[in-house]
Length: 248
Image (cartoon, rainbow, N blue to C red; front, side):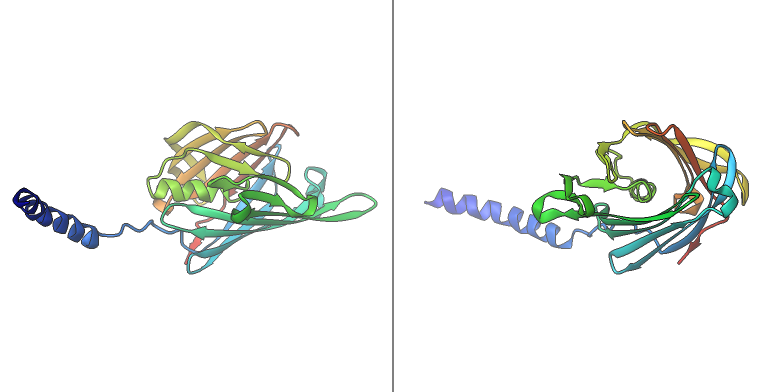
């Protein structure tokens, strides 16, 4: 049995060294998105039709992203709806995790006003995403975002040098994977608060939308412009940051 004792004696220091390396290896934490307050100009058909105000506040890792957009009366010939959207997110070392989306929509018509609510919830124990009001569901996907939080999900991935693979767009009608045709491309654009701003361009699409997103490295890769074409409705909408965001 001496050979066994010799083997154990020779491997014991290696095991101990591995154990110590495991204990003392530094834990790498993801860079978190800060709380923010931002305002975006909204353009439809080239016309400025109002502003969208977006704010994110976090308690620990749990975050609430709120977006409010209501066009002025004259602009309702271009877009006749106002929306408040509330998205629950969680910042982990792996991702900006989407948990829930709730939309309070108001549509204005000549003779009436209609109010609707849409609620989408990730139910991990049931491995699905559920549309509460319609009792409709889709498979649970790891990287899943609505059209508002998608920009911030991409920001988190880029900020932490994580791949942009298997990102899914979720709304009340479909769940579809996003396909990227441009990633992290240098692009110089003029913004309301800065000319010749250095940005990174991302272009992606699925069966429902074509989108372009510009992130600004000097603002922690904050989204400064996004253009979305709804292919089903043949309608393009552009959001452009109109002043530097308040980062908290």
